[in-house]
Image (cartoon, rainbow, N blue to C red; front, side):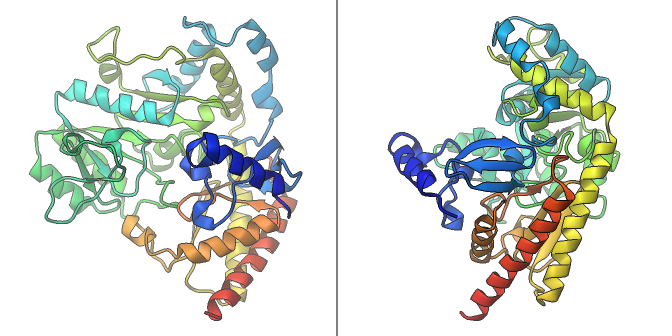
Length: 436
């Protein structure tokens, strides 16, 4: 495939945009490629500026559960835009989207709309601190909750009682109030609670981490976490910006039968438009201004265009929940095809994880249950794999640590062709690394 126009646009973008991209995950640097500049998308396919067509498994990093340019998502959007794009005042469509979420989500009694997942998580933490009158928060290594200062923290050494900034520009004073535990290790949580028994306001977690590949809880980890937070009066926050309405209508809460105190949402609830939200128990959410003393605001929060598209998608999913079974069936077929390819090629150092319509192929031997396990993955091998898949017209996330997303727009033919491409890509990986 020729991608000359993409290369030209990237070179020019680098003169005006830091790194040539408006989000680092689009940079393609870790896979030694130039970013693909997209012109349009329809259904399961996207077309780049060089007129190359790809089967898309990025799906805008998750939200396009109905595929690109879905007629469901686009219904009434022309009229909505013509009525006005923003008012800075309440609109009925905000209420309609809030109502369908609150009426159907087990953990959300009230909800506040914002414009991004980062806004949702940082606002939820502020409310939790206002509610508990405590200052510390606990997160888990490998779980990503946006680029808020207090959450860009990874684990320190065993001798350090606080985390380490995973970005420059974060003051040490911020690190003092963020402590980091290990996913799937309840003893690490207990140890930190014993260290700070009356100081932890909230524990925030991706109940299904989707930003260190795809990792699932082991040994009822989330149930144990829920019991601990209830015992110590700690607000438990599920960050379901990725998994909310994607792995099922009630996300991880529905999958595991666990009700946290708060939930952060995004991606799908905008149907493809910029959006985020956080919600939870009434007694916590009523701490927000104008009712309570916790201030949070946003001129474009509840934007009528994003709310309309989000409502279109969420309402459709609510009335057609069988779509989740259809997507999972397709993803199981993809998973089984990948496993057959790996067996045929006698590749044993690759581990596949799948939950619902999300999947990840780790270039590492299992089990993979936490961040340290994930970091065993061979990113060089992933890069060879990515390049081969891209050249065959398959677009996956340009990072070993991201997920593959299947939408309702993907067809049986898409899946079958992807499996064929996977075989060729893994064959190339094996040949190249056997010759080293």
